[in-house]
Amino acid sequence: MINQIRLDSFGPLSSIDWSALGRINLVIGGNGSGKTFLLKAIYSSLRTLEEKRGDEQRSEAEILVDKLHWTFQAEKIGDLVSKGGDTPLSSVITMDGQAFSYSFGRDTSRQISSLENHVPPRASNSVFLPAKEVLSLHQIILKTREQDRVFGFDDTYYDLAKALRISTSRGKNYREFAESRTLLEGILGGVIEYDETSGRWLFAKGRHRFPIGVTAEGIKKIAILDTLLGNRYLDPGSVVLMDEPESALHPAAIAQLLDIVALLAERGIQFFMASHSYFVVKKLFLIAQQRSWSIPIISATDNAWIDDDLKNGMPDNPIIAESIHLYQQEVELALQ
Image 1: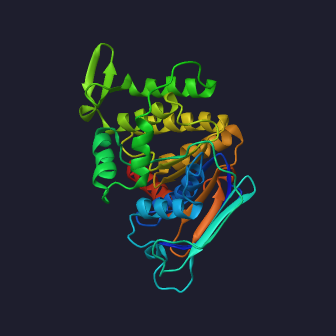
Image 2: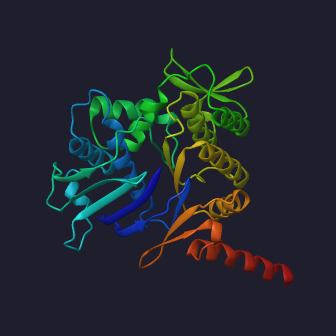
């Protein structure tokens, strides 16, 4: 698992030092606070470690430059250095006590000279689940990147699209994965299938099959996680980064999805989630209390990032404060 993340002068993230990370980790903050940026920074390092496998000829530095270029869609990676300061961009991710670190300045174009790695190549796959679903855009994403080679869909979308085209594996799966798939399909009310002949995703409910484009966005998001469990792209050593898990889901489905996340985390998958939903924070707080788990949380404030742990209670945060304020207003109206 990832144990610690330290970032300095990384775009909107002037300084983050987040340690004692757990099975589930939560990033909260308002729009534009840098939540997604933080997840993408983590993802870029993870995928660098995971792509350095087998007969891969590129160096780690070359892989990292490609990941930063395509994940953040920056023509010059030096553009990722925080504006208004002279401090170089610095990233350190510690996994199982071993560090992967790099740094570069704002004049850097396509070469990183300062990189140090003590983390062995990873056999497991990490995945970034964006706020928007990708099934209905699957072929467009692949064409845009593999044929056109243009910016538009970043590497989080492209890597996910490649993972989704792996065929579902038959045979016995991990118990927690099989149980999670059953629960996910219960939320879906059916199953998502890929039709090789037409090259389209379909939603199957009983004897009926519908084009993926006419199904609800929340169903498509849940189907993506189900597919990655079914085709064995994810395993107990994977790291899953979820941007706005609440997007397009009603509160009951959010709660069910997070229960499934806890089940998968129990089997070994590590989760990082970015959210601005009170429902997500509250449900994860309840999971922390019920399971006696540490669920680290880092919150964006006006001046800094503050870390806490949901096992210690609900943290002070504007999102939580506003939700409580609205509830108090409702109570006052009811008592009038």
